[in-house]
Image (tube, rainbow, N blue to C red; front, side):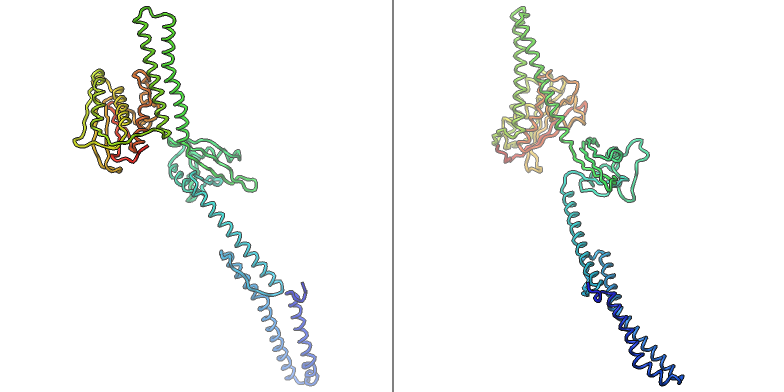
Length: 479
């Protein structure tokens, strides 16, 4: 850069001009005046006054020059920097000079532009991250090193509210608060402490309030030091329950098939070894083998029906039927069994029309399975009742059927599982003593669902159980 165009060069030229002006004035005007009038004291005083006025004028001019060239641009720069500090990142300087102040203004404008772009990019990234977190079904909770929550998404907020009242028994040093923020929830506290000690990712399933959460907690590091953690939590309760159901299903199917197979094998070996001493004993052994084969056939048939229903491949022939005729037909079929078991069977149907769109065979299977379940759990001298009436509900006009018994009842904690395959509310009851396969209620639930209806049960220990199901009168189901 040309020296004379810099700020120092301009100041140097100004000083040179100022000194030159003083010398010229003194040489041209003051020195001749001093020579001719120096003996006059009044003239000397006037000389000093004139020199003072000229000096004051020159310094004033120099001060104005400095204010114009240096102070004023610096004040603009200060105001622009203060505006950027306050968040006005679009602030720019309009100085157009060729000295250092001009270069400083250009550099400031470039800096402000880069800062504005950086802030805009950070804002976009923050909005993008916020959108991603909001769209996640998994809960995300970010913690600082002290355990205070610094960032969450909506599922994380709901989880913190749900776990907010949990406390750890015997825990005295559990932090209670961090200012006005929330602290790490108690179920995550052991993982958080291990992460701070080991400084590595932590993964485990956390069981909280009958739910199971898969938690992945990773450290947040800065300059080689852990400054916090981020935890991602996923509700895997359904997956865990399904896996448990799968294991239980395999175990139950193996048990249910192994029992009749063992009996058939044992009795057939007895026949082959000639252990039957008379035709009557041979016939009895053959009858047992036949009964067990029928039981195995029912089990396989029920399993196939249930698999087809859950896969959505069951054919439903929907047509208008009279539920009164269907209920009376099923009632006549079970009256013989009721007499044999010493149980009273009562049919209570509402007066009027009880017609609806349904698959008659499947609906008969529903009533048969519910009544069979009621008879198997009702002791001698008990009572089984079937009630049916028309109601108006959310599905419009609908048929309400209730099958009640006076049996032992079902514990409240088991009611939610009674429609699961092979589930036994009475843990002491041995499957097979009364011919049940453990699939009847599961089949009933799937048939009701195929009719776009709903089913539930109410029960009280020692007083019996009532199964309710609702079916829409007009159904659009045709498959």
